[in-house]
Length: 127
Image 1 (cartoon, helix red, strand yellow):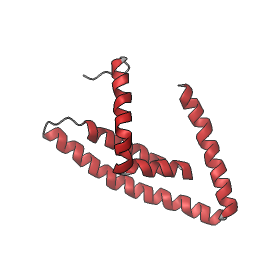
Image 2 (cartoon, rainbow, N blue to C red):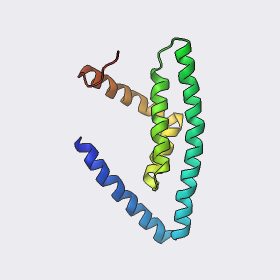
Image 3 (cartoon, rainbow, N blue to C red):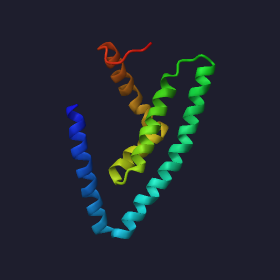
Image 4 (cartoon, helix red, strand yellow):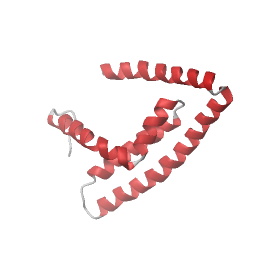
């Protein structure tokens, strides 16, 4: 819970600093246009990737395969899309990384380890 409070203080502060620097360097109008473009482009990419992940998840469920990787991909794409809809450069960068499969492959072992630890401690139950 402590990291959540820190996250809500550090991320908006960093975003404001980056937007201020960008506004002074590029100008206000180009900065606003970049934010709008990343929001629209991010929504499009998130929808496209999300539909692909949803189809993969459905396929795994109908063939009675474990949906582990497809489920983690779906959650990463959801968070990536949400981050891209938020105004700011830092959230856009993280959101773009979550939308593409290459960075997700790097994050996958960490997510699995985190989930395993949560299940081991009884904080997450699988029925």
